[in-house]
Length: 585
Image 1 (spheres, one colour):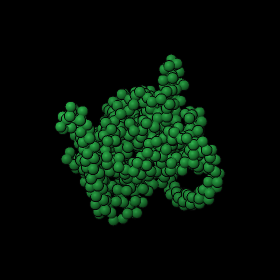
Image 2 (spheres, one colour):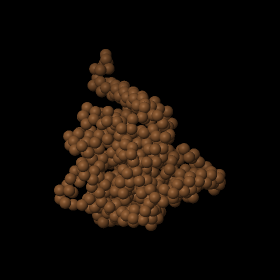
Image 3 (cartoon, helix red, strand yellow):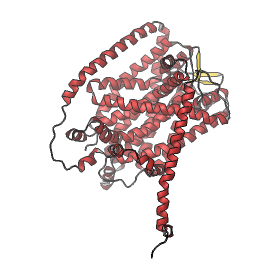
Image 4 (tube, one colour):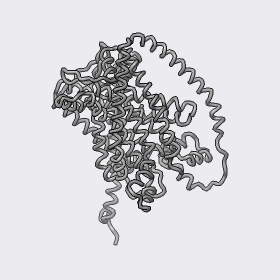
């Protein structure tokens, strides 16, 4: 029978409906790009205006959309800077043995230094760099948020590069992959899962740092910028519970929207890079990703870029018909060529360190012996709290993270909830916990450990989830086939599989605990100031009073303790993860 019109057939009707989807999706994508353009224009106009260090914060609910926009822009820019830095830093550290130990040690130190220790030099440098414009203050705040986001991304990428099977690296050399091809076809696919999950916790760390960065006091100068961080801090200080709850509700809405529009599609996309021999029956899905894949506007991007990014190296090798043997690249020659440049960079770095050390020695002359003794006592107290928070966090995050990583259905429910809890600034809950501690007569010394947990446990949880998701499905099926007991599964499959991710999570959680000590050991509750002995409290007090010698010495003590832990514990565990707990091709 001949149809006079294609819509007379039900299958043709559904086909036409499917064909109209890409147009609707393209309109939505174009609208998003247009909104981003106007946002850039608006932020550019604001940033290039006259600098206003203190901007009054309204507690009206109607002001929340504008404050949320400013905070999202700051966190977004800081995240992009963090990702670029992490990829560059991790790549150099992983492939340059001469500087690897120094770079990882420096990274471990930097991620443990509280945000307030970076505050004076960063803000003063940015204000001096861009005088006469609001951009200088904004750049200072963005860089401070950057210091709360970047370190775990760098650790994750570095750990992923070190865990690439040697057979895959040798294959890329035999087939003479360029550095660019190896990066997109081997290194990024291997690091994708860890980067996605650490991006979630990095953005959560950005929300945590928002309160300290958008509103702060530095000596006799005050800074207060429009944003959710300033809104929550002023609402807490004034005791406006209604405004505080409204601000937290907006943060939760932003986090949920980010999870559905960004993180869930990225998690589903990164699942294809799992190293396994058979396809898993449980796949992570995302309706948003499926819609974007239908967009003709996005598919118009040159195909070579997307193909080279999405096609893993082992697929290229499996379809290759070449039998020609090619000699590996001369790595020794490349190292000799790069040695001169490394010497130049080393001399420049040595000159900068010498200049900074001379000025630091002069500044430290203002520290008295009683101040130094008090700092030593505070260092011991904070060190014990940091390690206690790490132990407590690991006890519950490891089993919960493995359960989420092994069960995609559970992950769809629990992961957004965990992300919301991790992203809501922990400092917003501090007043509630502090009020409870005051009422039960507890001291801030023990209560500060609970406050540290709010900013520490998520690093371990999200890394454990990433590690559990990266365990090949065929190994899990083999464990079920051979009827492994629960103990055997944990000792021979789960713990070895998540070990590299767990170490990364523990290292970054340690840095998160040191950062959280500033808020956990020294807090304002209305007209009262609660504090306990610790380096975090002394850093906070030194920042408020502008006593920079104390601030510098406290930062040096943190660095010394972190270096000691790095050499005695973390470096050995990293070496164990690189050699023993590593998937073979």
